[in-house]
Amino acid sequence: MIRFEEISHHYPGQEHELLLDTISLTIERGECVGLTGPSGCGKSTLAHIGAGHIRPTGGRVLIEGRDLTAQPSRKVFLIHQEHDLFPWQRVEKQIQFAMTTPDAGRIKELLRLVRLTGYETFFPNQLSGGMKKRLALARALAVNPDLLILDESFSSLDSQLKTELHEDLRRIWRETGTTILMITHDSRELANLAHREIRLTAERPTRIRKGALV
Amino acid sequence: MPVKTLPVCIVHRTILHKGVWKDYEELRILTTFNHDHLPMLEYLEYRTIAVNCLYSIERVLAGVGLAVVVGIAAGLGRSMLPPMLKRNRLLKFLLEAPKFPPPIAWIPFVIIWFGIGETSAYAIVFIGAFAPIFTSTYEGAEAVPLALKNCARSMEIRGARLLWKIILPAAMPQIFTGIRVGVGMGWMSVIAAEMISGQSGLGYSIQLNRLNMQYDQMTVDMILIGIIGFLLFETIILLQKKIIPWHESTLS
Ligand SMILES: Nc1ncnc2c1ncn2[C@@H]1O[C@H](COP(=O)(O)OP(=O)(O)OP(=O)(O)O)[C@@H](O)[C@H]1O
Ligand SMILES: [Mg+2]
Image (cartoon, rainbow over all chains, first blue to last red; front, side, top):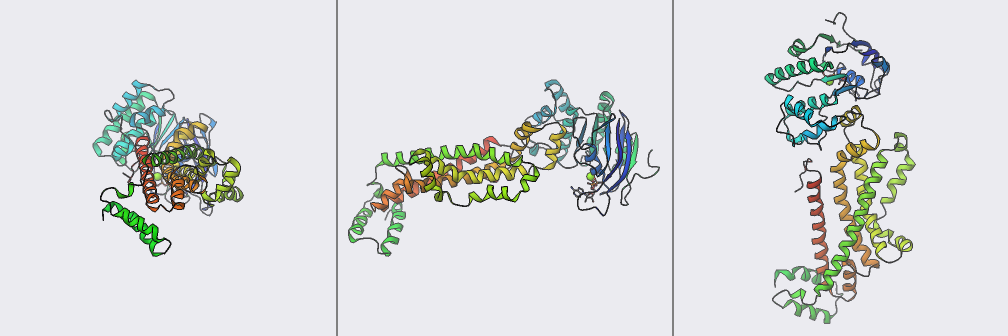
């Protein structure tokens, strides 16, 4: 169970205006929750707070009851909105590096899952935009976190691949029971994957819209 | 006049116009020019030239090699300092200011510390090459994208492993820029050092030939310095392509 407890946040130099205002939400183990809201409302910021990359100006992040605010760990893994692959690692190495113990069989399996078999020795800058996203997904699964946060991870993929990856993700989710927080603008993605939707409002400070919990 | 003698000729003309030369010299040079093949090499002793080249190359490789190891270590170390120390003006001054006196200005001190000999030559090259490598390593390490560092932190990669597996490779392109500049600085420094206090090497040869007023031989030395410097530079680019093949570089 992951709990965001009364999270408030503003970036340095923007003290006059809170970005997030006492946001509380709980994600049960094994759930897949969609997080939506207009651009710039603070979704990615919330994702970074969840992953422990940013210390919120107020509130706590609790994982299985333990306070892990601003403490990055393998329990929560965020696939960034921007490109965060290590440019010096080949495809296979990226996945191996993310594992605690290298497992050749598992690497193969993950590569097959995201359809990157045959690209083992490519560097990220030799892959297409969509392939990079798929590699980032495979790598996140190699970390095997309790909570996987996807920040618009499928947004630039073609619709067929998107559907396929949704299928895969659903299967992975069923097999591994990974909890997922999925930031998206895509209503089809929400319908395909999410159990419920949490919507952040546009007005500052951002709050969870009342009655938004589906 | 054969093309090969052109640089020699330019040097001589400049000097002749300045009236430094005696008639005797002028005569000697002008007769040299009348030879048809390899006129300027007639005076030269190939063995001496080769030995001098090797001396200079050995010094630059030793000094730059040391500067690469120490420069990268020091640059990474500096990037690991707590933010409070990084912002400290005095520390910043102490780290930045010493790189402004040119390597040649260090020569008297280096001779006091190490005497006249190979150690001093290495030290001068080291001083020339260290600063650009140190600075570019530090700046490269500081410029590692936050997304990469966050990603590594989420994989629980910390401390020495973070430095070795993430920061160092991410900073590699900038480190190589520093090494390229460092090799150039080191090469210029060793020539200068040999000119001032050497017993061998291309810089020493230039100085000796200058005293003997053998400007043609001096020109050969200058050309060799240019060629070797260029080859050193190209070697670093080759190494860069081998070591960081993932980096898209416009250099070729
Ligand atoms: N590092 C930062 N420093 C200062 N301000 C920031 C920083 N990152 C984001 N912001 C500001 O915080 C606000 C929310 O940004 P955030 O990236 O969380 O939005 P988002 O909801 O993910 O938007 P999008 O849907 O476009 O990705 C924006 O107004 C942005 O300008
Ligand atoms: Mg965002």
